Amino acid sequence: MQVLMAFITGLIFGLGLILSGMTDPAKVIGFLDIAGAWNPSLAFVMGGAILIASIAFHFANTRPKALLGSVMRLPTARQIDRRLVLGGLAFGVGWGLTGYCPGPALASLAIGGSKPLIFVVAMLAGMAIFEIHDRCSSAHKREAV
Image (cartoon, helix red, strand yellow):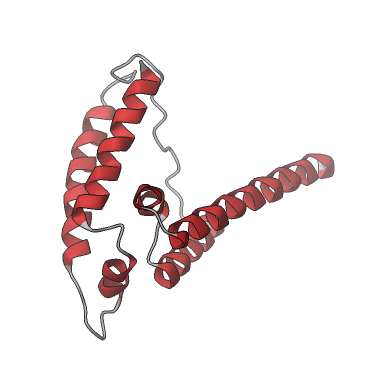
């Protein structure tokens, strides 16, 4: 049941991205071009998403378990650290250069084309590099203690 709900949720999310035009890199880059031909439509999509997510997180914080019975895994970190800043910068640079972030890139795979495929492959490679680096750093720290 959880896999089915994850699939349905992902499908609704992807359709929302496609219908809102967020899978079009030109629209995203237009939003980021505040000194040129600025396109504010992404701000409205983000605002709507933040509103809905804030309501969902409010209710999630009051529950010990998810609706389907699994354990709630909400973020607990409250501190802005170096990893968060560097990760945010890397995300922002990649988003600005390509016009894709992970969700719209995956939804764009359904539409086709080589650009989202190249982005997704590069994204997965970056995730793998992070995992390898993180594991090596953790192992090195354990050895130092």
